Image (cartoon, rainbow, N blue to C red):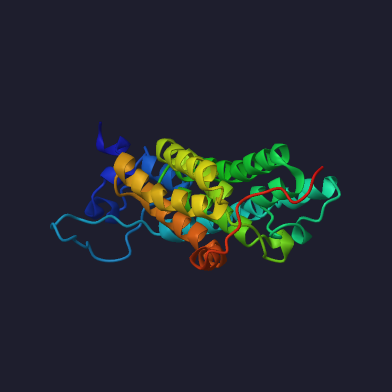
Length: 262
């Protein structure tokens, strides 16, 4: 291809500094910038550790940061939608005053039974999946996409619709990772389900599934943004179970059981 049609990423710093403007701009599209954007270096030609010219384009980091912040804020609000309390209220049950008081699928099972628990789990997972998929659409791949899934998880744990009180984030984190790394997520889900069937302790199963997730991602996807995203999600899920950890160590954690018959 001629020099006039080379992509932005192919133009050395020196050429860009002389005012050359590429007509094909895949790098601009990757950052979500308009075709009218012009690459303008901010100083003398820098070199990396290998002695190669570095390319820096005025405005890209700032515009990308704003785009990430807006996307994460929207995902945080979506992740905070409390499907558990909404469905429980339709059934005339105050989920906060039932069982553990948690808004997630486990407490919905205690209050309303398996049918509604599965529904809430699916809806909470859908929040994470939608935000993760939106992140991939907006940023193709990379940590910005992962942060959209993390934002949905944070929204569930610190729901802005419930005075920043929420659930454990297991289903929402699972939904996000199913978009980013489906096979590792399915393995973690299978482990979660197996431990629930064996021990009947949801908190133990949730933490085991969270711990296994980064390991599975590492095996199937290696070190990269998916692995780092899984580490953050696993860490948040385990942190949200800090009270359960204390009860497990004391031998006081209860097995899952119905508290209401409806």
